[in-house]
Length: 239
Image (spheres, helix red, strand yellow):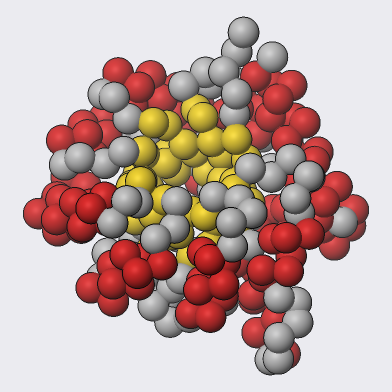
């Protein structure tokens, strides 16, 4: 029987909509609570250094909520390490972060930053947090991720989503290598109803994290319906 696959829903852009006008509506935690039973298996939030969407109060409230596991995306800074180890989310996903970027544009360079990542991973794990690294599907980056003690890698699917030739094969090979290295394999970035199934069909992938597309589809069909449909497609692909 094929292994199960989880859907993590990134709710950053609920906060983007709230912040466009100020005030407290829509509230990310209230939205998270409303999504129980839709097929969502976990909540992803990215507390950026510039607080452009999720705010500290959002992170506090969502991490304190026991409704679903929280995946806390973060840059590797002393501030974010202190916040994560205090809030103790289920998992922390370390991502590259640049102030000028609109969204995360690529994977971590684990090979050349392992001296920074290794102690950060140890600090997070000491606090009881599972640590994921957001990486491109490159063997050297995966091998370095295993070497420095990560629990999980999340494969960056952005190039695949943008239609770059050969990316599905790269992701397939990377998922196989990830498992061989003893790491749990997640994937995400740019996934849609139209392109999710080839990724969801990879047997090594245990979780997909999707946000922007689901919030966009919510304008047309509602967020619970969009999440339910995404999960249906994922399960169908797995079977």
